[in-house]
Image (tube, rainbow over all chains, first blue to last red; front, side, top):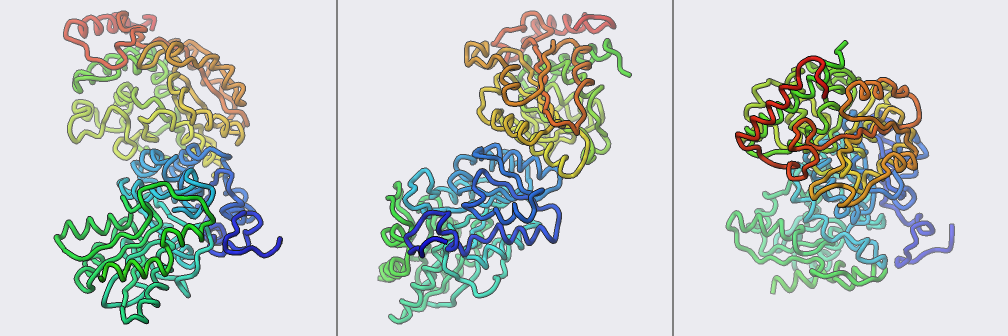
Length: 324
Length: 280
């Protein structure tokens, strides 16, 4: 292994020892020991997304399609019709935008049990720039009928989500980070379809967060506690179906709601929360904390998160602002 | 065995049914179904190993209609074989009908994959053929593409993958009617040489007259074993609108609606040709 790398380091080859939460390849390799219908596909990214472990352990059930993501989606659909549960892995930008029509027409319209592992969502590709950022994927995927959308926020959540969704009917879009998320869960969480996971009780304000926003929200809640603000934190691990009950409870039981997401504030988690509140005629103070409707700057991811406030300090400041 | 004359008659019947269904819908893709009529007839009444009473039979041959807009010519065949009641045809495309212009696998027994966005289905066929290999099944997967469909880049991603994975159990059939919506394919966006291009992508190719049922049957009977390692592309040279003289190679009939007089003339021409021995 090369010299130790700081948090700003990027190169996926040399820093792969830092990819502690990029665990889906390993988890699927374990699952494939238990059942023979699991197959994994990638488009020339087996080292970047660490599915090479699956390839080593189950070469006969691993398909590398080369740099042809749209073809990969179709091949996965064909495999699903044969009774396999295909896991397709690629960058979230390609999974959701390059292959948006394939998600809809080939996977969702057909109700096939393909699982799309859309890793490096949001701006976690850092200085690779807009072509590799995915800040529109929640908007795209949530509007596709019969597509389940989930976003496990750390390694334990990823393992638990893969296991809990393996036999769900229809396709699942799994929104994943870059594999360096700090842990939220000490042990495997229990996911219930369509429900948030409450990771912190609180009575003054509710922070509904997804992805890296969950860890940031928990750390923000700790800071806010020292100011006497008691923040509830919900992990929106399910983005569709959506936990309307918990949204309404947040509005009724706490004084304000703040959503946190690594996504354009248009069409993401915050929009989904606002829709629920509006549809039920529930008035509350609401702040949508996410990325502006613009193309992100380039920088190492951690620098970008600080710049855009997707950090404990950024979230805490937003909560204080909304509470006035 | 079904005779060549019977298969040719079936093709003319497919055209007559297409005219009937366009009438029900008020508009439809006559010409694209007409160019594929003999291919449908030979595939469904001779080649494919299928069980209409068991549409999900795991060892069945798969057929994917990449050019989904020709489904109007396929639905009557599926109904005739018993995949679904023939009465469904009477409500073709009407509110609540399972039968749309493009086929929906979740609604129509016998449809192995939904289509409509052309360029997608050869990839799906690669997945099905790969799945068959992984499960050690020996059926074949057939994918029919239009020649205009070859404009779609994804077709060539799939073609590359098919030879890379050595899928001798995959068969592409190009309904090369030489025409797309805006006119002759050669003028809109040239795709020749189709044969040379598939060969360059590692495929075995056969070029035939796509209206000669004997030639179609011979090509499909001569396919290499599904366990072989080279996918086959059958380039079927066809005429868009085949069978109705005023529709042949007339781009305006890609999508259209026959008035009463034209319809009577078209039906008369097709019926005159359905007597045994009539050339198709």
